[in-house]
Length: 211
Image (cartoon, rainbow, N blue to C red):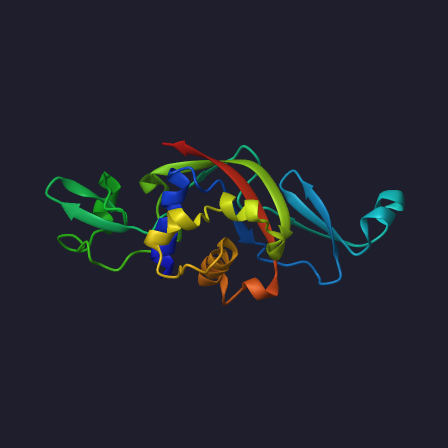
């Protein structure tokens, strides 16, 4: 499975109510010898001293990082792979599930008489807000080590074997939810934050909101 197909599968899981959490790596990881302190509003804090002494006399040096995705209650626009396309009815955007969204602003993105539906898919990160079909409300923000994810965490990430199995080529009968999640994670982050490196990750709990 390529990245485009994976992202489209995850979008379907969100729309179907199977995926309510997403994990994203902290782009700047704390020093190796720092201790996780907690999330305060939309900032994560680490300290060079274990929590107990910190609570007693505020000792230690701190490392903090603001969540780049927003704070609780903020709205995110759901990004998907896309192709600008022009039809006889007008310009718009195609998504991998063959949904076509008409929008006048797509016209200037079309090449010549319009892109082929078989054109190269554009990165989900480049989808304009006006073309987004769904929005997500952040309900909670946590931080944890990637490998601390539980079986419930895998399910909240949309990893249901009976649900994903027919649409994925990476699944075999002896693979677990953990195996599948690792495959998906490394597909996106193998070069920067592979599963084996066990990075700290943002854990965003969200709720789907239709536009």
